[in-house]
Structures are given as structure tokens and as C-alpha cells.
Length: 143
Image 1 (cartoon, one colour):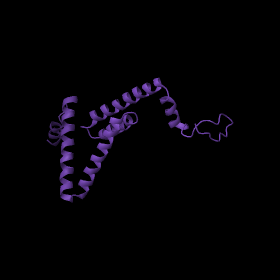
Image 2 (cartoon, rainbow, N blue to C red):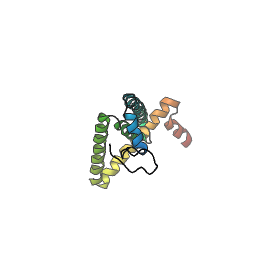
Image 3 (cartoon, one colour):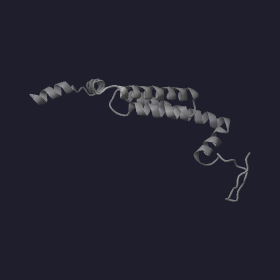
Image 4 (cartoon, one colour):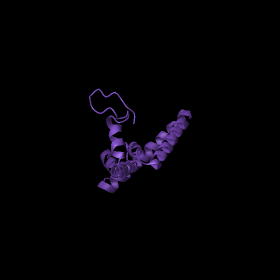
């Protein structure tokens, strides 16, 4: 154990890295029960975020952002989640770089297809969940 200058007058044997939130996490991980409890809590919270985000993906909004946040939470305790998050970040970066290298006409087509897909999904979700047909509503409004 490294000896540090403890200016509070307490024990001077505590190492550097044991302060703040990271120090608290190290303290929790130092026991078998703490490690298991932390893994369970992180697993439940991360899985809830990923599942909730995946449910929101078809709808306009932050679905993918929530999925990435859930993976980031899971990556704090699970190596497979860390690898999946790194793969997803690389894939997203490659897609973004490819799209930025394309000309404006292709970007406009991709944007239009994305907007059309989002509109169809919203129409379909409203029709299934609330029984509202937006096409009929617009047709009634225009006539």
C-alpha cells in the first residue's frame, strides 16, 4: 500500500485512487458480495436502458442514444458489452464518414428515405395503438 500525506489527521496508509466515486466503487468491488451486487444492479439498469431504447428506435426521438447509454452502463462491468459498444461506435463512425464523403444529391435521397420511413412508422404506430388514421384525418381536413 502506498503511503500518502493525509492532511486530515487520519490514517496515512490509504492509496491514491480511493477517493471520490471511483474509490467508492473500488470499495464495493473489494468484497465478493459487493462485486456480485454491483454486477446485478449494473446488469438490470443497463438492460432496462437497452430494451427501452430498442422499443423507442422505430419512433422519432432518442432511441439509439438510449441504447448506446445502456451499453455504456453495461460496459462498466461486462467485457462483452464493452466490445459491443466499441464495435457500434466504429460502425457509426464509419457510416458517418462515408455519408460525409458523398455528394449532396445522395445525402438528400438518404434523408428523404429516412424521413419517409419515420413517417410510415409513426402512421403505423398511431393506427395500431390509438386507432387514428392520419391519412383519413388529412383527407377529411382538406375536404
